[in-house]
Length: 73
Length: 492
Image 1: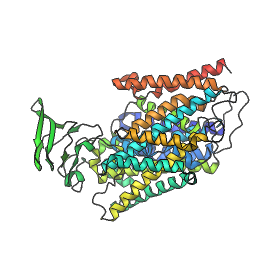
Image 2: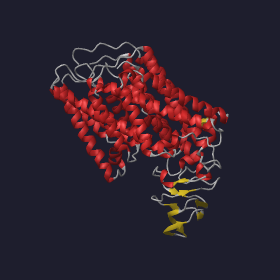
Image 3: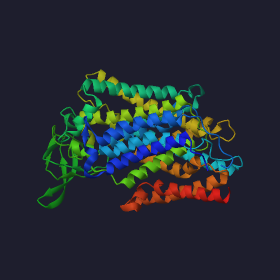
Image 4: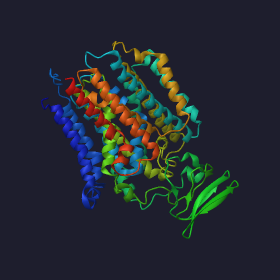
């Protein structure tokens, strides 16, 4: 089994950021349309928060040295 | 592949970059999803696994040929999409379609053929980013609106109306140029003028009765359409619209645009799978990707910058030119400076030239990066595929010829990414030991993709099958991955 590396964690976090957008959009009663400081929650998340978080995740987790490939692969 | 600029240039072709603001302007939240996936997909793919190439050491020539041919076709289709976009831009700005095609294809071929210029992709990409950002900042400064205030203004618009400075109002435009596919249905009484005359076909609503009417208009003659009437596709005369009237085909209000009902979640997943598989094929298949810490930061920063630009550009374009919605938003309209009355000449012309220069520089950077990407697959290590002037002349020439007929550049890009993704994506992310396993999985994935894509010609329909036909990679990529998994178990 391949070990869980920091890169794996980074990829998982990026996938979660994508899933968060789907989840927010699916919330009932148009929760995602609530305006906060001029933008709706969905736009804050999808247009600002998620991309900025993705950049931070990439810098923090994806930039680590690559693990050596295991012989079984 | 080590250069961050090349990775960005391979992924961010002009058709892909402009598809984001186009989708944002057309369908708010769905455009946001597209932008988010375009931004995150390369990062996910680059971070995945070990960066080892797909094919193992015991691959036979026939097995290494499959990824080369697949990527060659993919690069050809991507070039086709972007050269067709150049033709669209030329036609939209009043030039001949072939002029845009010839300039773009010739410049692309020259740059790939002339050895001293082959390492200019990073410089060209920087020029494209800089020029696009300068035009955007100038627009924001002239409007005296920050991006959030601009979004708020769009989202609170009671209706999207023709501004008095719109070319559709002042001199009129050829209706055939509005080829976005949206219906031209009027929401209120609207008087149309045909400055040069021509034949106008409309479907009118008289009481509860539909009637199709054809008017032969003399130059300067006007026609009045009422709420519910629709101009039929195929009318290609020049028309002038009234200022301050609702734009046919625009969302009912800013609120509908900002918070409109999103597409089915499965469609969003289909788009994400297509782009993730496409990114895996384009950025990982057959090459080792090793990025330093700084490199990863630059890649993520570049993608973020492109997404921020796309969002701001979409919002400012809607504020300044709501006529963007007329007939549906197409990519070429976003390369026209949206401020019709904001800047005096020659400043306006300069900004427009800067915007076009950004588009051309992005295309040239992408062409160079795609050539290097293909060259990196050469099993001899010499990159011969990337240095063959005859091959690249054929690719650019074929793409230029095909571009003479208008196509949707984004649909073509999505087709290329989906096909390549199903053929090469699974093996790029889970490289098997044997090249034959990768080739078998790729062929099966590609066949599944082709069958579903061909079904698009019969219409996509609804439900899961409809989404699978609209986004063939949603089914075809897992099918390829399953065959790969089977192959790895049979031939460990």
